[in-house]
Image (cartoon, rainbow, N blue to C red; front, side, top):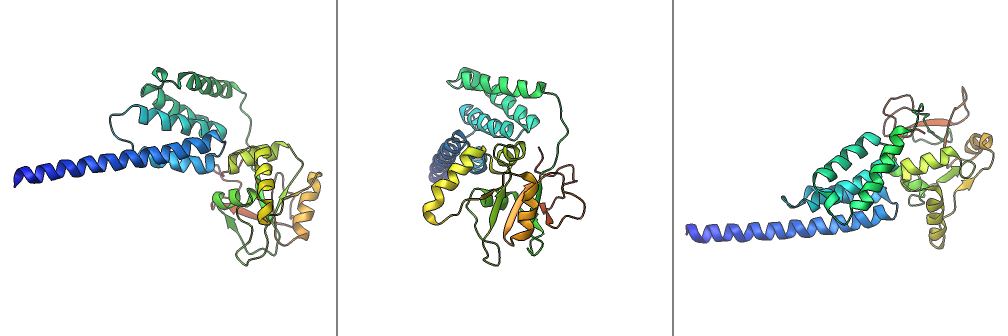
Length: 252
């Protein structure tokens, strides 16, 4: 009986390892593809899932995920986290893999960023129409709104995403941090969704008119810097954090 029990246990353990390896490969491949496509928002959770089920003792399954997490951290200008992941990938032996050249390039990009002069972060404040009942929004919902994936408010009224001048510093930072894509890719995404009835965001060439548009349109939402005193718009928090908080998630 003891031998049968031990054999059964070994078989179960073998199946568990096999399934874990399958789960790892599925999550890793999907996550890597999304991150290679500049979609860190959806790729990062998959890579993190892969790390949870990565078979022990396999260094490749350590450095591949950490390399991709470093890419996304660098895109978000989270240099400390990017450095941490790169060190983990290097310790696991990525320099002896076929990804060594890409790894070195990413490491050089991090070093260049670290040498850039430190500049004070300016928060990108999220604003809506005063009649909107929303007081806080998650980064996830904010990303979905500005990628055209979420189109209605809780009361089923239409959401109107509003952008300031194209290629502005604010746009570049917002899309990089919130959508984890560049401005062109986000707008291309919107264009591709038009056949589903998705309407393009409103683009206002004069930044000073953005707040006026928000005030005059009930479903509008935008991000802005340097909100004037007593604005005729409603400022909302992001992930429960006010723009004055040190860990406010959107800053340029």
